Length: 298
Image 1 (cartoon, rainbow, N blue to C red):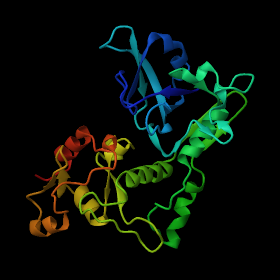
Image 2: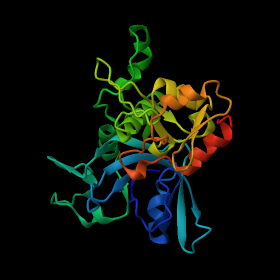
Image 3: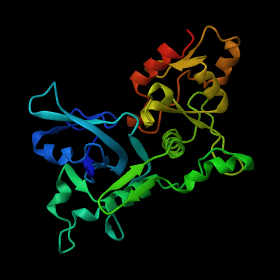
Image 4: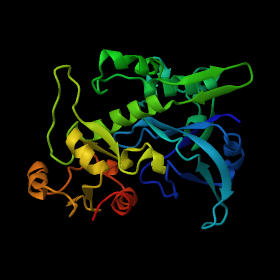
């Protein structure tokens, strides 16, 4: 087993879903087999406009032949392991490539950097993930002094144990919640998608939460397409099924709500949830459908 880099782009011709599967031809089979049971980092090529560079981490569960495509394979991602970085990590910084393994003996970038799948050293993995999960913005919710002890784990973004022959990596639930919050709130410009309001408290922190559309307890992934920024009141109504969203983001109000007029006054005048700044971060219909069928009180 070993760490790796999977190159992926949103307009890929391959049948990829980064949180679920990575499709690849036979030529990469041997390389990806070495990643089974271990972690990989997703990378978006620099030639893409506004490339995110290294943008997520995930664990490869197994490899299977693609039942829909001859001579193609699928690297299946372990459910719940995928995590987008709160900070995109560029290919290079002032010191050169962040991924040192792409350098040749002369210290120049080799052709290896063009490979869609490549191995990643433990040191490079730790460097990339450390920068990707580093907390840089004050987006955490307010907490009382008596509660801060439970959040001390945030001081260490992940647990990385490197031994002579083996390196292990884990991400705690506390860290996942913090990173998910940062990614979702940034996508919605820290505005409540239901009311459209953007409140920042005296400490400079956003008074909105990052809500999972399909909850973690129901196998909902920590991806921006399964998230929505909601104020406290909107979050309460969403979790209790008093409101939901159609696939085109129309705000649905439950007929069981006891103050429908008040709820209509609370939501923004368009009657539609605000969309993320980027279309690619929009709530996925499959998660919205799950919420309507399992939470919404019709």
